[in-house]
Amino acid sequence: MNIKDLDLQFLKSKTILVTGASRGIGKALAEKLLDLGNIVIGTSRNLNSLENLAEKFTRNFYPMELDLESTEAIANLSDELIKKFEKIDVLVCNAGVLGEIKKIEDCDYETWCHTININLNNQFLLVKSLLPSLKKSKKGSIVIISSSVGQNPREKWGAYSISKLGMEGLSKILAQELESDKIIVNTVNPGGTATRMRKQAIPDEDQSKIPQPEDILPIVLYLCSNEAHVSSQSFNARDFIGHLKF
Ligand SMILES: NC(=O)c1ccc[n+]([C@@H]2O[C@H](COP(=O)([O-])OP(=O)(O)OC[C@H]3O[C@@H](n4cnc5c(N)ncnc54)[C@H](OP(=O)(O)O)[C@@H]3O)[C@@H](O)[C@H]2O)c1
Image 1 (cartoon, protein in one colour):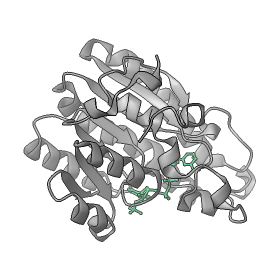
Image 2 (cartoon, rainbow, N blue to C red; image 1 turned 180 degrees about the horizontal axis):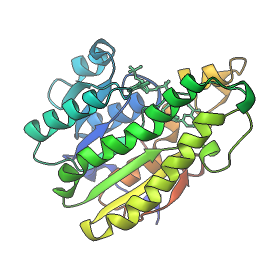
Image 3 (cartoon, rainbow, N blue to C red; image 1 turned 180 degrees about the vertical axis):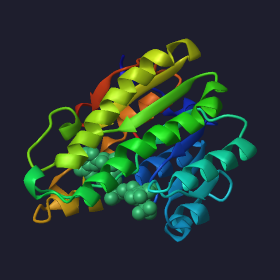
């Protein structure tokens, strides 16, 4: 696998769903995929925060509402997608919340459940409801945006860490179950990236000194492309910074 060989001009005309496209990593990814000429469905809880992309990409951007707290919202989104699009080629499970950074003994049960529901339980529902559309693609790919604490659980990162560990596991199980459907499933740990979530986690950090959302995109773009045949892998985006020229 050599990402440097990927010619980005061939990553076009795919139908790609990016959850959490209103800011941060999801927005940078959606924008790049749109620039390349893909059809992108981008979600947010608030359609207004997708206006910016909608105004810039009037032909190929489809803003849609999704609140991952709501199982009904997931059902509505998947119904709409099935009506509007013949197939989905790539699903990028990017949206997520941080929850509380506290020791387990100080964690509040409701906040715990809220974080696990958004970052894990309802991601399961979203993936499950979109599988029929992904199976219609000739080259399906599911990319799960994970975290370093989903590889190595860390003190005080309780529910968030557990939710990402769960997603790492879900990814491995799906990769096996979908092999015969030619759908690859992988996770990407972005590493510390300058976004609102990172600011919430580490408020005193100088975000100009860490990678920006665009910097960590190469491995994600590769996994969206026809070149990617790997499955069941966990990638660290930092290993691929600078591997593609945008
Ligand atoms: N930044 C980092 O350093 C870092 C490190 C490791 C992993 N990650 C992972 O990277 C992914 C993107 O994070 P980010 O740093 O780009 O964060 P971010 O800037 O806070 O963006 C989070 C995105 O998730 C959406 N979202 C939040 N709550 C939601 C809900 N209940 N339902 C649906 N969508 C919701 C937000 O959309 P709306 O608010 O518009 O609905 C927003 O688009 C996350 O999975 C995060 O765990 C980030």
